[in-house]
Figure 1: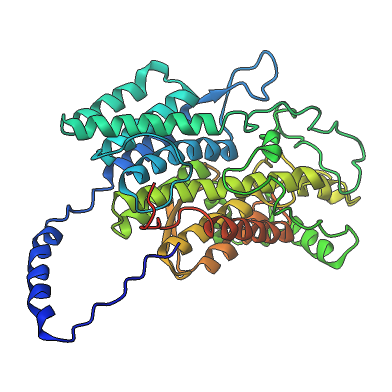
Figure 2 (figure 1 turned 45 degrees about the vertical axis):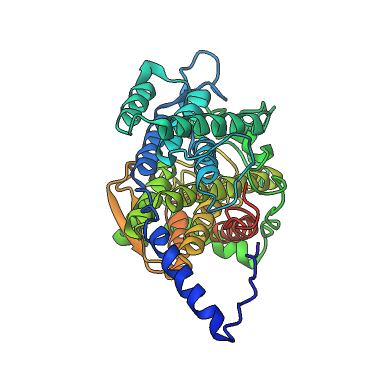
Length: 450
């Protein structure tokens, strides 16, 4: 997307000097009068509103008859956040023209307010996908709009936001969200088939499976759900698998005698809910680096949509290989001492390989490195403590490599994964992110425009 190259004027001869000086004097006031960048606060506020709404939402997807609706699982929560931030991004870029649209849609932006466009796009997308129990979102919407000038710019921004939300709703219709999946959860067998995934025996009930439909969902950015399918997991008799098995058995045990208190704290940190964790991190980065409204909106959509696509490809790999979790593998190894082996925290109910957190968090790291134009990004993230998913503490990562390295250890120390699974997940996440970031959210070609 190159900018137009202009042939320089020749200054040969005195006839050009005075006109050029006069032209410069004439344009200076217009340049000085350029409006200041818009505050990002409304985008930060409505990102938090969206997180709150997604966390409060309930669904019957995968819930057996007779049981109450469940909260969204973390992977599907990032999907819903992607819907919202995509609409917000397109609405703002329709007005600002700073970056390319995610998806082109027809509406006259004119001199529209980007602030009201953010509010309108967020609100309309959330209500479409989640409804508005108790009118909570409607109340927040009314208060946000009331805080803006009551003028034509605000009205135009509302219309742009509505159009962007409607476009995303149409674009993502039939994308595979909540598609029925038959017999995804294998029937437990005793002894288990070596290497074959079984539902978590501690789940209640075991058919409460985590978003198997994600494996076949149409990605937001990538070409297919299998575009970056991970290589096959190591053979059960390989030196790599045996070393990984022994490490997780020792360090991931709930009552491990080799895992240190600091290592336990790291494991607990990454138990925090990623819907909260990722979005809080993105808001913190936007404020730390004083991003304006346009760049904040861009960061927010990249920070949820790129990891969501990495998770879609990750779940394709999970359900392609159907590899067993440590809790199944270790209990089945024939050692009486391991018959009741239990991980530090209850194992999520989806296949082990590759690690979903590895896929998503590495993608987030790639986004942060791309936006900040450095892998030495010094990012502070919130996390959890002592088995809670609430974000009650923070850790700072000087580099992208530091983030990747700690996450690998954390998923082993909590007993969820074998080390190779997290590494391959991170490979997938980085690859998916690199492909997407080379093609989307790029500076707009000033010669064209929307």
